[in-house]
View 1 (cartoon, rainbow, N blue to C red):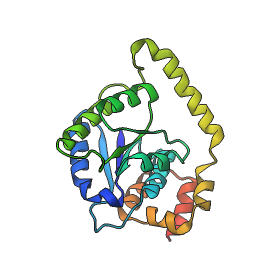
View 2: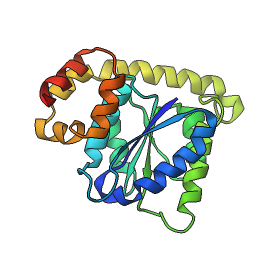
View 3: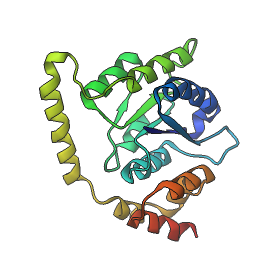
Length: 211
């Protein structure tokens, strides 16, 4: 599994801590972590809205399998990510959130609070959250006797999202161009995306605005 990490400006200083904690949990499980940044307070700024744009492109184009993102409370990043088709983002505050989101909702993105409640033991909480998200098979239901209706509801939600969202390329074309370029015109994203994305209308559009 390819897992992208995306941080926004208010919590950019914690990128290294989050990245190292995530890597420490998932690499022994055979997963790969791609750090999109921000890499620190002096890095090119991203807002939580731009986190959502990047998550929407990476997941919508199937360049990664999962996105870990967040902001001060996690709520803004979650809302931004869920603005895009093929993204199912949950708010994860603690390990039980992580476990139940993975087992019940089987989403492909989490938004976490990297300021609110981020005190002593924060790296331990992150580690336990990541273990509960990425260890074992997801979508198995919780509790066990709810497995079938939960799996059925997830399929229903996926079908509803196919109806309620427009094609990604149409969305990107109508997003404020300055906002979009502020998200995609960063080396970490461009290097990874263009090396791994399949040919598509989205890829051609992004090439056209970045040239």
